[in-house]
Length: 173
Image (cartoon, rainbow, N blue to C red; front, side):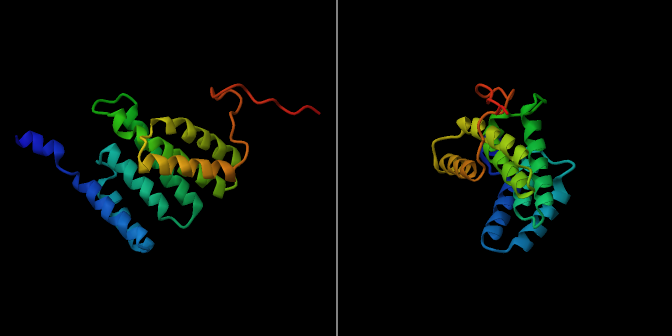
């Protein structure tokens, strides 16, 4: 019985992160960043990959500098990859739904940094990963955000050799 309660008990750290995210969404970006950084300092080295992924993903949203935002989003992606790389205790299903949002965030970061090719690459990855999203509010919202980004960043079709459809034809002179 106690074991079942542990399995269904909410994750205290994810609850704390959620509370800080509400603070951020309420308009207090500086305080949210400060509190998320405190959590990062407490948990980053010994923390679970899921916690590091979540923290880094939300920390990215609190950054003022696009390069810092990119660095945090890359940390989030790296932590997500730890959950899917076959390590003992890794649970790919628990993070599969994160990939569309993670790649979309990276596409936005690269676009802010005028790195359109990298942005397109991550946008294509976001679109491919969107197949894993549920048909609920979250999934619909992420797919809509991907579509909006595709409109902002033309030519997000397949790049040669990315395994997503036939290669584009190169213009001839």
